[in-house]
Length: 200
Image (tube, rainbow, N blue to C red; front, side, top):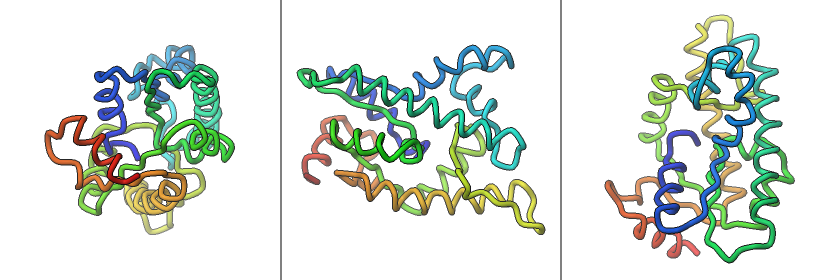
């Protein structure tokens, strides 16, 4: 999920010589002409373009985003091909599990899928971060606003519903599950790698 540490650990692995593919960057590159029209830039710009699930533009934009995500993943798979000489890390988005079942199957086929699992207290911090620094998050059909709720109340309730739904999907597709609390503060990348090895 967004804000769990995927990109941080991907970059740490890159510093060890891993070839690094960042799905967010590829999506942003493909969206660049559209973002430029609105004066948006970066991941924050992608989030502003997509909007929040209570906004009218969200439904169509999240489908466009998923289409670009699928395109980005297919591009990564094509670049990797059968060349596994160099260690490679694929920094997916949290919504990769919504892109397409064939994408998830291919990801498992060509890589070791690692799920960093958030505890309840970490999920609280993730939601706070999502509100303060929004990132593009796919809700699919999980968001619904009840008559007695404000938009922000619905967003919080449905974000938690989304987290729980995704936790099940992440677990289903993962080869390795690492509890976030098992990663020590200021941990070195070799500690992260050792946690992966211990789980195999």
